[in-house]
Amino acid sequence: MTKADLVDEIADRTGLTKKDVAETVDEFLEAVSRALVQGKHIEIRGFGTFKVKDRRSRIARNPRTGAQVQVPPRRVPVFKVSKELKDKVAAAGSPTTT
Image (tube, rainbow, N blue to C red):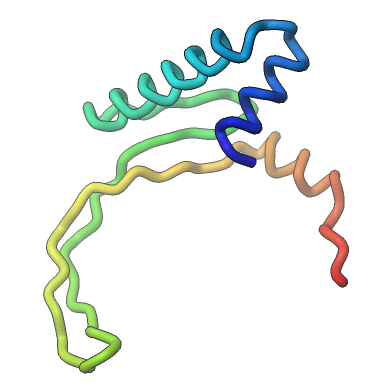
């Protein structure tokens, strides 16, 4: 599902204009981004938590040459799914295989 698909679905369900929904979705995503840049975490109960984790520096290997490479420490955004959302997805059943 793309952001455009999300906007279409919300607009259909709420009766709001696509323009208003798109602005709201953009502002929500921007607010989450700003909070993460500031090192804050965002908890949306029943959905999950966005936060920033610090990764230590490490030694990695270049897969092409096999040479060791020093990877510097960095901060990365992470998302942890809530138990409620995990349970909803599990209750929906596993996808069918073809």
